[in-house]
Length: 209
Image (cartoon, rainbow, N blue to C red; front, side):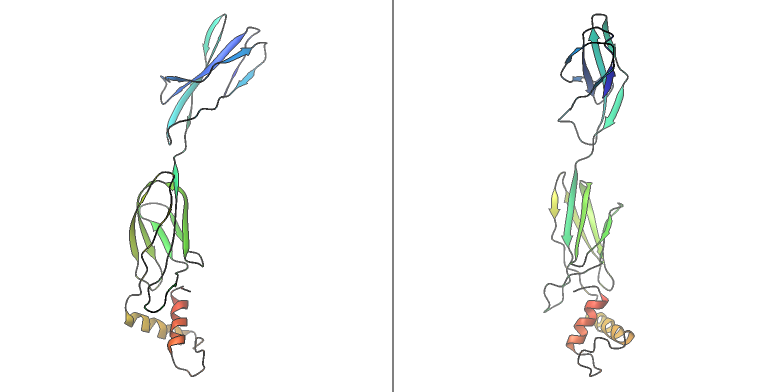
């Protein structure tokens, strides 16, 4: 965007633009400017490279000659991508368990989020690149997964299921949870840790549902 003053002379103008101050490209010519006031000149430019600095200047011509405006610059935005997925838990005999409040991080970046109540996460408008997805949650084994995210892609990845450390770890986690919370999962009131109580305890402790 720039301004011209025709100084009472019929004038034309256009923009030069390019990736350096040699420019090399031009817009269409704007014609028919007269009078002595300032005219605001703007032009839409398409097919620019993403994440690139461009230089531009206004060139105006009338019967007295050609005038060149000052060099200006702008930077185009990178083409971003979206990444989403769902974190689930693998327990024999129990399908459809998801992990809420799991920590999701793209290694060596500032992209960090957590899963929602449905075990879902999303990264929006992030740079296209190769990433390593790191997933962690309380009392579960962390997992890593490599991702190739392309420009403009909306990638819904299939994430590997999370695992509990061991059967002994499950047993101890359940027992600790029941003891600490004063047997609040003892659904039948027999003061014993049966299968229903064990499942409820595990779901609460490791944030699954």
